[in-house]
Length: 205
Image (tube, rainbow, N blue to C red):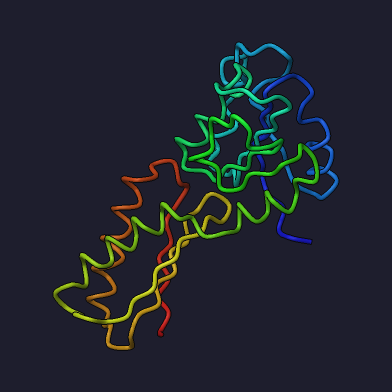
């Protein structure tokens, strides 16, 4: 079995995500909701003694189950915007027709069920936006020292922490690695201020 995930589950209408919730829990994954009932307001963070599931910083992926095509998000989908602000990968299940999240989703499914593999794929895959930010920061830090050097950068999220894998030539000395790590960490922190931590790992390519 894959490493258990923490999945934030949303839905466009009450009960739309019931099957997906059952599947995720049966597979051993933890799930959180933004709403404890069919009421769109208040959300979990505003309920008495409530807390936003995103505050802990350990959500791996957001899943939005859409039973009906809408050009605009429904009130119960308000947590999708919050998840995207936290730079989390998003899985949209239920079809791409009139999907307002088309430009933001990591994975889109044509069904509201059989969602586990898609959530795992989105959570464990490379974070494209983060990787682009880290690559630009690496290029800026190495331009003067390592002209033409082949450097590969990839960013993944693990239990809320961003793990940056940088494959660099053996000529990268400690000073240059420190410079790159500092630049990359600063750039990623500006891009994703909600990440629990940032680990930069160097590999020799």
